[in-house]
Length: 283
Ligand SMILES: [Zn+2]
Image (cartoon, rainbow, N blue to C red; front, side, top):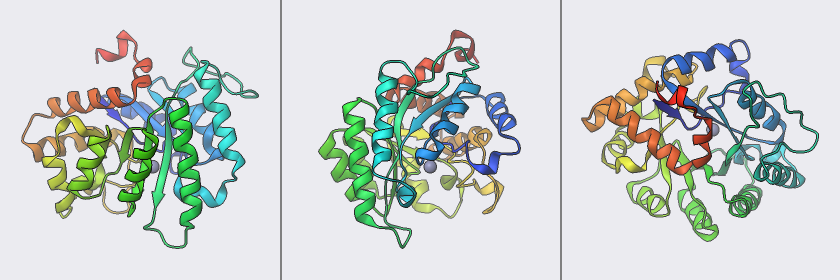
């Protein structure tokens, strides 16, 4: 069994074949796909996926590159969803159209964070949304899915301040920063970027970090693995091959990687285990 801890299955790149992509991931042994929200407007799309597919899990948050399309009241809106979730319900006005027989759970606050790589973004605005959402994660006792680019130290400072933990997705910082995040209880997400032979720094991190700290992800449709090419559309059914690359890098069996990274994902996202019924764990 494998867990894709970060996949934007609601993205428009999947409009033509979303259900097939979800099924193909299942057929490839991917037993959970965590779909993060990026802004208020996509919350219902993320919810719909977890209502339609038993192996899709919902996270909700405002992404640092979507703060310009967001309003401060969207934080209140997110808080409403989290409050209802804490009571096992959907927020007011949202129909329960679940095809999977239960009200979906929000497994994390995300995707949230800071991105100082892309130019033209307002850092203070990003920090406002990040901090407000860290407060919500703490209030509702949920892990966070972090987007961290050129901002690892600033992110570490804030997560330490609010005492939250979770996953640093598509990790690409230094070994020292990785160790600081691990010490704070974070898992680090590795995916397609690690499969590129020229990604020497990232591959050495994937080789050397403790296996207990690593979770797998695709970030589909983005960050394609090397075999799909720079412009290929990534998808969650690529996860077994990504796991194979990590196994090769570490000189262990793929089964060990699958088992350890799934356990790590369930440890850091405890509500994910609610997706499982005896029937789907046995595969
Ligand atoms: Zn993402």
